[in-house]
Length: 130
Image (cartoon, rainbow, N blue to C red):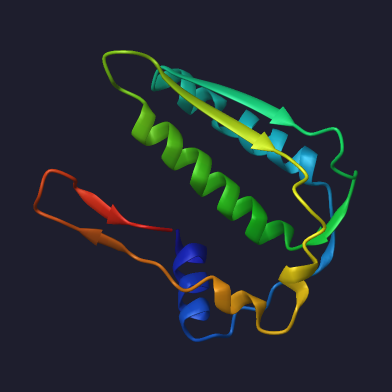
């Protein structure tokens, strides 16, 4: 949690440096899902995983940030899909979409503005994007 808060502060200040090192994406996705599998069972959520065999064994990127994002996304999906009348279902799909050349262009991260979570007194307790 403290790491996430520090990272958020760095993002807001425009000082978060992303790594560009070889990382095994398929292994990372499988590890995150394995780590959250017990939570899914506890919440009566079926957690499924598909890893596209076309994903290279290693790609360049920031493994720490990717792991944080994947963990947060899957954890939230489980949290908001569970504890209901009917069992929940969360599907994680790691697929090769394109070669991401556009994401390496200068200023390309400007396409991803900061987001926030807003607490509301209405029927939806949390609204926002992230």
